[in-house]
Length: 124
Image 1 (cartoon, rainbow, N blue to C red):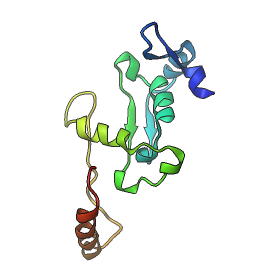
Image 2 (image 1 turned 90 degrees about the vertical axis):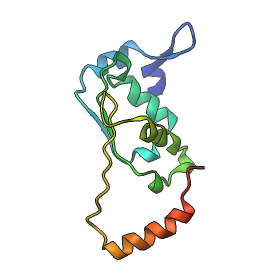
Image 3 (image 1 turned 60 degrees about the horizontal axis):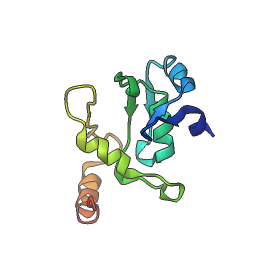
């Protein structure tokens, strides 16, 4: 129902924010999303509609780790995360900041897990 209120199709069939979404988007300076790797296409559409992305004023900040995506049963789409991960650069409106430091685990545990996952975790 939220999607119907916030997203409509133009004459060409392209998804566009409704008047309600545009009004709502003016109220948000920033939109922060944690566990983005578990977002689905409906959530992505809703968040995009109420963000500044559609007026070329991106204000969405996402945090996630595709290796932690566990909600496929509720239509999580880790490809959304990967598309952004692969296309965002170090400059411009769409920047990626890699948070590569781990302060919760010992080096030996991290090294062992990384060796194990190197053989298991592939893009395909």
